[in-house]
Length: 298
Ligand SMILES: Nc1ncnc2c1ncn2[C@@H]1O[C@H](COP(=O)(O)OP(=O)(O)O)[C@@H](O)[C@H]1O
Ligand SMILES: N[C@@H](CCOP(=O)(O)O)C(=O)O
Image (cartoon, rainbow, N blue to C red):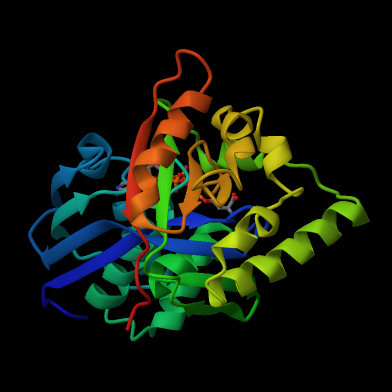
């Protein structure tokens, strides 16, 4: 067990990127930062987005993950004084739950003296999430491909082109990932699976080869986006912008409801925001976050 203070900073992530359902994700330069020290009782000082949720002592996913991990490992739950600064939108498809679960597992590994390495922390958080894509990109940074089986998570990340930018277009109301997974079918046709296999391979190659021109083809998806459009109405409105003036690729961000637009450079941001606003359903109010892509973790 350790009584030393602990600090962690983890990025937002946009998972799936169109075809890579539960497989691909990209880290974004928006962060969750947690500082902790052992104390006589739990307290949280929250700043940034969603302070009400991030600062709550009841039903807080950070505290739940921390306590659950320590209890499962047979260790006492050391009370903590926490400072949480959060820039990641909650329930928008930007990986807030993966970041907070990784933070909770990391706190447990530290204060419980569990001796877990990064791979074990990533595996534990991915199991709690039920899929490894966000957690892998959040932990490793960059563009990440991941898979998970009984032995744990396998993940590889590489640097995404530093000049590319992400626009995250968020509606007013969040959508729980569990609700967005509930609309997906159990079975798919061979034709749909083949389109996604081709796209995933092409998309990974497009990031590695820095080929923004390929994104319009490589971000095609038939596995989750067609079904999620009903609960993510920004998606059908913005998907047709892919491949047009300054917006090479468009996809649902994670499980939605936000939509991700990938741009080849900073200079395209203003024009892309204008086109996005023009394409929105009448009366729809959105927040558009322009993000740099987060580097690979060293
Ligand atoms: N920093 C945080 N502190 C406490 N709870 C959080 C935090 N970030 C996320 N959560 C929890 O995770 C939920 C969102 O997770 P989820 O539905 O998977 O959406 P997403 O991961 O796309 O943001 C929030 O409603 C909240 O319960
Ligand atoms: N592959 C998952 C990704 C969920 O990401 P989130 O950021 O919405 O939590 C899915 O598509 O359900």
